[in-house]
Amino acid sequence: MKQRTQVINDAIPGIILLFTGLGTLLDEGLTQNIMPYIDIIVGIVVVRLAIEELHSKHARKRFNWFDVSAGCVILIEAVNQYKPYKGFQPAYFYFLVGILTILRGIFAGKLPTFRKVTLNDEGIFVRTALLRSFSFSWSDLFRIDRSASALVFHSTGRARTLNLRRIENKNELLETIIGAAGERGIQVEIIK
Image (cartoon, rainbow, N blue to C red; front, top):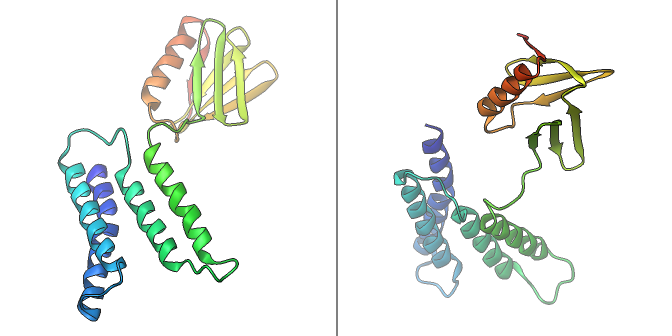
């Protein structure tokens, strides 16, 4: 159900672009302005990609075509709004946003995530953000509290919390940490 809702959310901008282009052409007739034609073409491409996504069995892996096509439309709008005789203008902002959106779509699956949990024979290393991390050696841990949304690691002198809401493989991680703690005789308590 979540995938179907996401696909519908991705198709809505394409439908809007398609109807915007058609409405402009119906109001103005055939025009020298290229924007309605581009809106129609990109709208059709976005809707087609959404339908393909709905019928595919695999998630998008290489590119997020919706972001790439949206970035192209933003760049075209920037070109349309650019006035060479003006100093600072909104077109610069459109250029920047368009390029960033295209890059986000191209590198969709390749951008690093900073959340990382590493278990080894020495202990646990947790990175929750770019500059925020903590680690414990197994010998320092004496208790792990487990709730539905967090793990709290208790060590001599301090306790640290790992928020599980943002972790995709939460169940596998819980099994691994609880198994490793059980092997080493560390107490695991379930807290409601």
